[in-house]
Image 1 (cartoon, helix red, strand yellow):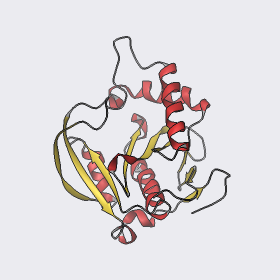
Image 2 (cartoon, rainbow, N blue to C red):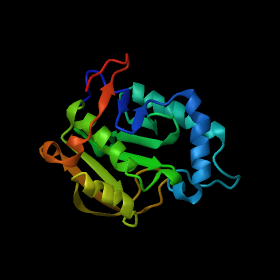
Image 3 (cartoon, rainbow, N blue to C red):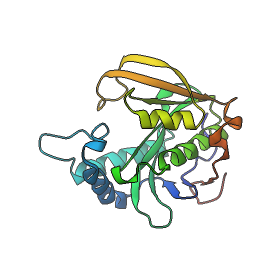
Image 4 (cartoon, helix red, strand yellow):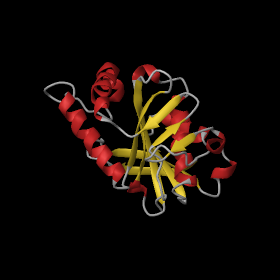
Length: 207
Protein backbone atom coordinates (compact mmCIF):
# COMPACT_ATOMS: atom_id res chain seq x y z
CA UNK A 1 0.00 0.00 0.00
CA UNK A 2 2.89 2.39 0.68
CA UNK A 3 3.93 4.84 -2.00
CA UNK A 4 7.40 4.42 -3.47
CA UNK A 5 8.23 7.83 -2.08
CA UNK A 6 5.73 9.22 0.46
CA UNK A 7 4.90 12.90 0.67
CA UNK A 8 7.09 14.56 3.29
CA UNK A 9 5.50 17.95 2.66
CA UNK A 10 2.26 19.12 1.06
CA UNK A 11 1.25 22.62 0.01
CA UNK A 12 -2.32 23.84 -0.34
CA UNK A 13 -3.48 27.37 -1.22
CA UNK A 14 -3.14 28.47 2.44
CA UNK A 15 -1.25 25.76 4.27
CA UNK A 16 2.00 23.83 4.50
CA UNK A 17 1.76 20.30 5.84
CA UNK A 18 5.16 18.82 6.71
CA UNK A 19 6.98 16.38 8.94
CA UNK A 20 7.67 17.64 12.42
CA UNK A 21 10.97 19.20 13.47
CA UNK A 22 12.55 19.87 16.88
CA UNK A 23 11.70 23.56 16.48
CA UNK A 24 7.98 22.67 16.44
CA UNK A 25 7.92 21.79 20.14
CA UNK A 26 7.57 25.32 21.53
CA UNK A 27 4.97 26.51 18.95
CA UNK A 28 3.01 23.30 19.53
CA UNK A 29 3.03 23.94 23.28
CA UNK A 30 1.79 27.50 22.71
CA UNK A 31 -0.99 26.34 20.36
CA UNK A 32 -2.22 23.74 22.85
CA UNK A 33 -1.93 25.96 25.92
CA UNK A 34 -3.68 28.92 24.30
CA UNK A 35 -6.55 26.67 23.12
CA UNK A 36 -7.53 25.56 26.62
CA UNK A 37 -10.50 23.20 26.85
CA UNK A 38 -10.91 23.22 23.06
CA UNK A 39 -8.12 20.61 22.79
CA UNK A 40 -8.69 18.59 25.95
CA UNK A 41 -9.84 15.64 23.81
CA UNK A 42 -6.37 15.46 22.27
CA UNK A 43 -4.30 16.79 25.18
CA UNK A 44 -6.07 15.84 28.42
CA UNK A 45 -5.21 18.12 31.35
CA UNK A 46 -2.91 16.61 33.96
CA UNK A 47 -3.09 17.10 37.74
CA UNK A 48 0.17 19.02 37.59
CA UNK A 49 -1.12 21.37 34.89
CA UNK A 50 -0.87 21.68 31.07
CA UNK A 51 1.34 19.16 29.22
CA UNK A 52 4.94 20.44 29.58
CA UNK A 53 7.40 21.10 26.77
CA UNK A 54 9.14 17.76 27.45
CA UNK A 55 5.92 15.88 26.67
CA UNK A 56 5.54 17.67 23.34
CA UNK A 57 9.16 16.89 22.50
CA UNK A 58 8.56 13.20 23.24
CA UNK A 59 5.38 13.11 21.17
CA UNK A 60 7.01 14.86 18.20
CA UNK A 61 9.95 12.45 18.27
CA UNK A 62 7.57 9.49 18.26
CA UNK A 63 5.54 11.02 15.44
CA UNK A 64 8.60 11.57 13.25
CA UNK A 65 9.92 8.08 13.98
CA UNK A 66 6.66 6.48 12.91
CA UNK A 67 6.52 8.59 9.78
CA UNK A 68 10.02 7.59 8.67
CA UNK A 69 9.17 3.92 9.29
CA UNK A 70 6.10 4.14 7.01
CA UNK A 71 3.67 3.71 9.88
CA UNK A 72 1.27 6.57 10.71
CA UNK A 73 1.88 9.74 8.70
CA UNK A 74 1.35 12.78 10.95
CA UNK A 75 1.92 16.26 9.55
CA UNK A 76 2.43 19.56 11.32
CA UNK A 77 0.18 22.22 9.76
CA UNK A 78 1.44 25.81 9.50
CA UNK A 79 0.29 28.88 7.63
CA UNK A 80 1.98 28.82 4.25
CA UNK A 81 3.22 32.41 4.23
CA UNK A 82 3.84 33.06 7.94
CA UNK A 83 4.85 29.66 9.33
CA UNK A 84 2.42 30.04 12.25
CA UNK A 85 1.68 26.71 13.94
CA UNK A 86 -1.99 25.81 13.44
CA UNK A 87 -2.35 22.13 14.29
CA UNK A 88 -1.76 18.66 12.93
CA UNK A 89 -3.33 16.23 10.48
CA UNK A 90 -2.42 12.64 9.78
CA UNK A 91 -3.15 9.37 8.06
CA UNK A 92 -3.44 6.54 10.57
CA UNK A 93 -2.90 2.85 9.85
CA UNK A 94 -5.44 1.62 12.40
CA UNK A 95 -8.12 1.60 9.66
CA UNK A 96 -6.78 -1.77 8.48
CA UNK A 97 -5.19 -3.19 5.34
CA UNK A 98 -5.51 -1.05 2.22
CA UNK A 99 -7.02 1.78 4.23
CA UNK A 100 -6.16 4.87 6.24
CA UNK A 101 -7.97 6.88 8.86
CA UNK A 102 -7.63 10.66 8.76
CA UNK A 103 -7.38 12.56 12.03
CA UNK A 104 -6.62 16.18 12.83
CA UNK A 105 -6.73 18.99 15.36
CA UNK A 106 -6.65 22.78 15.00
CA UNK A 107 -5.85 25.46 17.54
CA UNK A 108 -8.92 27.28 18.85
CA UNK A 109 -8.36 30.57 17.01
CA UNK A 110 -7.97 28.79 13.64
CA UNK A 111 -11.37 27.09 13.53
CA UNK A 112 -14.25 28.33 11.40
CA UNK A 113 -12.06 29.29 8.43
CA UNK A 114 -12.30 26.12 6.34
CA UNK A 115 -8.77 25.06 7.27
CA UNK A 116 -9.82 21.64 8.60
CA UNK A 117 -11.48 20.86 5.27
CA UNK A 118 -8.45 22.09 3.32
CA UNK A 119 -5.86 20.09 5.23
CA UNK A 120 -8.03 16.97 5.38
CA UNK A 121 -8.55 17.09 1.62
CA UNK A 122 -4.79 17.39 1.13
CA UNK A 123 -3.93 14.17 2.95
CA UNK A 124 -6.89 12.38 1.36
CA UNK A 125 -5.41 13.16 -2.04
CA UNK A 126 -2.04 11.67 -1.08
CA UNK A 127 -3.73 8.59 0.40
CA UNK A 128 -5.60 7.77 -2.80
CA UNK A 129 -3.12 9.04 -5.39
CA UNK A 130 0.21 8.06 -3.80
CA UNK A 131 -0.60 5.28 -1.33
CA UNK A 132 -3.31 3.83 -3.58
CA UNK A 133 -5.57 2.92 -0.67
CA UNK A 134 -9.02 1.43 -1.16
CA UNK A 135 -10.71 3.61 1.45
CA UNK A 136 -10.19 6.46 3.91
CA UNK A 137 -12.11 6.62 7.19
CA UNK A 138 -12.94 9.59 9.38
CA UNK A 139 -14.29 9.05 12.87
CA UNK A 140 -15.57 11.58 15.37
CA UNK A 141 -17.63 11.99 18.52
CA UNK A 142 -21.38 12.23 17.75
CA UNK A 143 -21.35 15.64 19.44
CA UNK A 144 -18.57 16.91 17.16
CA UNK A 145 -20.75 18.56 14.54
CA UNK A 146 -17.79 20.39 12.98
CA UNK A 147 -15.86 17.21 12.15
CA UNK A 148 -19.00 15.50 10.87
CA UNK A 149 -19.53 18.52 8.60
CA UNK A 150 -15.96 18.23 7.27
CA UNK A 151 -16.58 14.58 6.41
CA UNK A 152 -19.82 15.33 4.58
CA UNK A 153 -18.30 18.35 2.83
CA UNK A 154 -15.57 16.11 1.38
CA UNK A 155 -17.97 13.47 0.13
CA UNK A 156 -17.71 10.89 2.92
CA UNK A 157 -20.61 8.55 3.66
CA UNK A 158 -21.78 7.90 7.20
CA UNK A 159 -21.47 4.15 7.72
CA UNK A 160 -22.85 4.10 11.22
CA UNK A 161 -22.49 4.74 14.91
CA UNK A 162 -19.96 2.52 16.66
CA UNK A 163 -20.97 1.98 20.27
CA UNK A 164 -18.67 2.12 23.30
CA UNK A 165 -15.40 2.44 21.34
CA UNK A 166 -12.00 3.71 22.48
CA UNK A 167 -9.52 4.12 19.62
CA UNK A 168 -6.61 5.58 21.60
CA UNK A 169 -5.50 5.59 25.26
CA UNK A 170 -6.21 9.31 25.66
CA UNK A 171 -9.76 8.99 24.29
CA UNK A 172 -12.77 8.70 26.54
CA UNK A 173 -14.72 5.52 25.81
CA UNK A 174 -18.01 6.26 24.08
CA UNK A 175 -19.93 6.17 20.82
CA UNK A 176 -18.18 7.16 17.58
CA UNK A 177 -19.52 8.14 14.16
CA UNK A 178 -17.69 6.37 11.32
CA UNK A 179 -17.52 7.98 7.88
CA UNK A 180 -15.78 6.50 4.84
CA UNK A 181 -14.70 7.51 1.35
CA UNK A 182 -13.92 4.78 -1.20
CA UNK A 183 -11.36 4.88 -3.98
CA UNK A 184 -14.17 4.53 -6.54
CA UNK A 185 -15.90 7.61 -5.09
CA UNK A 186 -12.85 9.81 -4.66
CA UNK A 187 -12.35 10.94 -8.32
CA UNK A 188 -15.87 12.37 -8.38
CA UNK A 189 -15.74 14.04 -4.97
CA UNK A 190 -14.76 17.48 -3.65
CA UNK A 191 -11.40 16.38 -2.17
CA UNK A 192 -10.09 15.51 -5.63
CA UNK A 193 -10.53 19.13 -6.75
CA UNK A 194 -8.50 20.75 -3.93
CA UNK A 195 -5.19 21.98 -5.44
CA UNK A 196 -2.07 20.63 -3.75
CA UNK A 197 1.62 20.08 -4.40
CA UNK A 198 3.35 17.15 -2.67
CA UNK A 199 7.09 16.67 -2.27
CA UNK A 200 9.22 13.67 -1.28
CA UNK A 201 12.08 13.37 1.24
CA UNK A 202 14.48 15.11 -1.18
CA UNK A 203 12.06 17.95 -1.92
CA UNK A 204 11.21 16.63 -5.38
CA UNK A 205 7.62 17.11 -6.50
CA UNK A 206 5.65 13.87 -6.66
CA UNK A 207 2.10 15.21 -7.00
